[in-house]
Amino acid sequence: GSITVNPEGGLNLISPDGSDAQVVCENDSLNPIEIQYQLLDGASGATVTGLPAGISFSFIADIITISGFPTVSITTTTVYTYTITTTGSPCSGTTTGTITVNPDDDLDLISAVGTDAQELCEGDAIDNITYQFSGGATSASVTGLLPLGVNFVIAGNELTISGTPTDIPGTYNYTVGTLGGTCTAASLIGTITVNPQGG
Image (cartoon, rainbow, N blue to C red; front, side):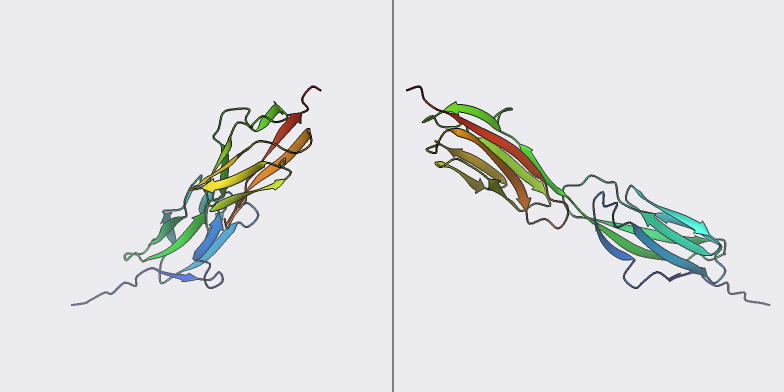
């Protein structure tokens, strides 16, 4: 009699150590992913599942290359576990890796449309201007100019600008920007125009 033992198709990571556990930002075209495996032990092909949108694989000779940049739209850090399964030999082998995608910062005006471009008379209170930060952002701040008497506060994931201008009349330009994220920050601009009272 005979006992024939076929080898299990093997995969060897040949790109740098750690490349099979990458951490990237969503839509990060500046740092594309490239992960390479070499087929071993009778394997002649492979399939790859679990890749995020924007990431694909190719097979040339005995090298599998996973490449691209994620085009997913996410609001929280998301881990994609991919699985490579060899083909072409009686016994398939598998290996897994991860691609962790961190979200960009998001910033939206959630008060009424136009509140970020107000025009009012000296001595009048502004309508509250409220922004919501999300995605990778953990906070936000205001830079540029706010008239004296106008300030901002943060509650939860919202930044609100409010108050009564006590400064000289004029146009005050400000920028709201996100903070704390590991990926691309977001910013929005606004204006508060204070007109003088008729004398």
